[in-house]
Image (cartoon, rainbow, N blue to C red; front, side):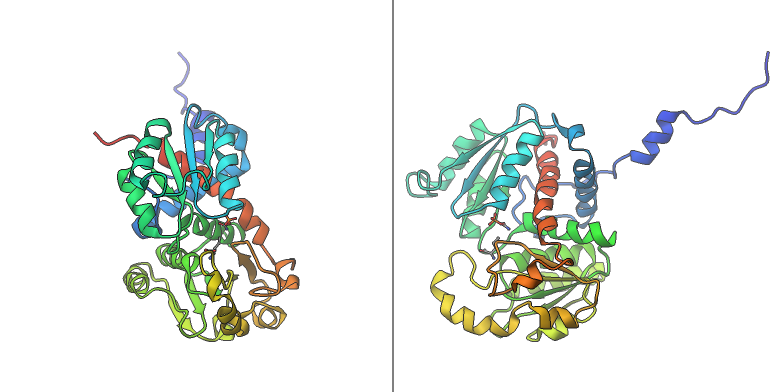
Length: 338
Ligand code: CP
Ligand code: NVA
């Protein structure tokens, strides 16, 4: 008999160690839906980002992950990024999607939102809903038997924040203690960014005109969350203060969908908050530029800034696809509670 040899670890064990995905937090998607980041567990961000990263690197490896599954897409407002990224995302994952024409099926007009939710739940495995009022999405989700994803409401845009944070993480390899400066309106995009940044431990320096600050209730929540995570959130009315030490400078439109009647007033009020060469000239040299798009070139952001080599705006738009694919897989392959 030969000597007993110490057994080398098999290749399989080695590879498994290297590529094993992050452990799924026990309370991943405790709630059936993805309506806002308020309910999203902080540990879920990194879990989702790791999956999105693998999907971005090797999309073919996930090409049948949602085979046989279908997604209904109801948009009560226009969309390019959200609509196309969900549609292409489903197709890249081997599933299918159905776009419901908002002219034909306005929520609550031809029939109640509740009835639409119940019917779509019989055909589809999840629904993406974009609606003006967040309460409409909540009501819809309560009636739906399948997961409902908020594709933007007047209050929140959580899918956008997933891509925003993923884009910052992609460049700086971390999110904790990153300084994000947000210049502009205290709107849906900022509300979701507030929850996201506070939960991952990033700092957020906000500059809005007076009277356009984020919602008080959201700010109250953020105070508690940031105490836990160590994130620092500051509010001011001075964009030059906000961009000091920024790793990322973020802006959004001054007139969101549904606010068209306030356009003239808003254009006047927001003028000093334009993200332009003067502001970026005072920001740290490696600060990246972000915008959720659509952008109004020459209003909230100038041509030279949006097209600047430090602009990550189009990577950010691309990352909607990868982060939402991860979201779809996690929501649609979840084991149902008995
Ligand atoms: N950023 C974003 O949600 O774009 P759309 O309105 O085009 O979907
Ligand atoms: N705040 C903008 C975001 C668009 C993606 C809006 O609601 O119109």
